[in-house]
Image 1: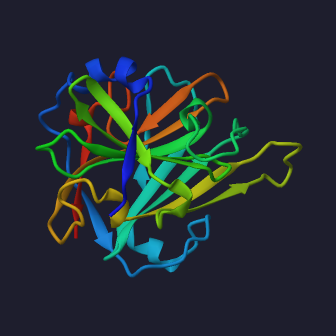
Image 2: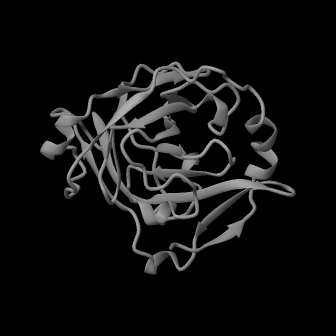
Image 3: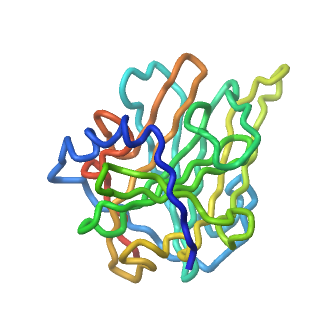
Length: 241
């Protein structure tokens, strides 16, 4: 089982009031997550296994004047859950070159997993175009909401992730056309949450996001949130095949 240690940072001040607000009775139609055999990540989504999953469109959220296309795919296996993101982009705003940094302050894609609605504990994962990650376990405590990160991070058998950046044929300098990220999260990383691992028919609440900084901050989401990404009751539903 993965152990975690506590860090209390700006989430406690920024997110707690909104997490318990904006309850949505109908999270929308459940997304069917197909099962797959385990496979190697390439960073570009070229594995045949991805053909089993349909693209999920992420929609602009808030004051977003960007026209970039953003979409994702999700699969699961007996060992963990897979994510693929495609992000149209002209320029990367990405300078952080370590894991566990504040990646959301630059270009990033994120997914949130809330397996058990009886408890307000959930998992957040961020991956940058430079292939650095931020895995977090979040939950309610006596003083609000707190984030947790993996203990002995570099020694823990955990996630796998790969990223690829695509350039236009006429691109100059740091101009690009898109970037793609693949992530595998084994169930042991989610071991402190209930309803893990999923079996056929299991339903998890979840959401998918992107942040881009080409023209100020622009956000995308699968299921729209109205204050910040941590509004659990606005999440959609994953239903496992």
